[in-house]
Each structure stands twice: as structure tokens, then as C-alpha cells.
Length: 74
Image (cartoon, rainbow, N blue to C red):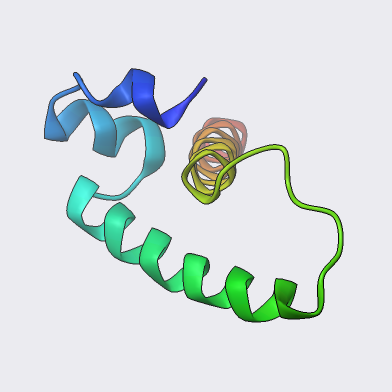
């Protein structure tokens, strides 16, 4: 799943998948992008995934995990 493939989703569909609104997601990407740039200032291996894809995977996994835990508890 790539961030580009989710551009056609409605705001509600995006929120169901990631747990946040698209505007909040963009703000999170800006913060992470500046953080990764300062972290990679010294060099090192670059990531195979862009920041948007990394955050998308993290958010989708967290949202799925929360849903599974809620079903398990109830």
C-alpha cells in the first residue's frame, strides 16, 4: 500500500484506514520529514520508503491493532 494509491479516498475512508484526517496526516509528515532530515544530516543509508509511506504503514498497523484488541477485550 502506497500513499499515492490513497489519494482517491474520501476523508472518512482515509480516517478509517489510518485513524487521522488527511490534514493531520500531512502535518505529521511535515514534522517527520524535518526530523528525518536532521537525523540523516551525518549521512547513512537512505530509506527505501518515503516518509509518507512509513507513516501510512505505521498508522494503518496501529489502527488495525487497536481494532483487534478492542474486539478481543469485549
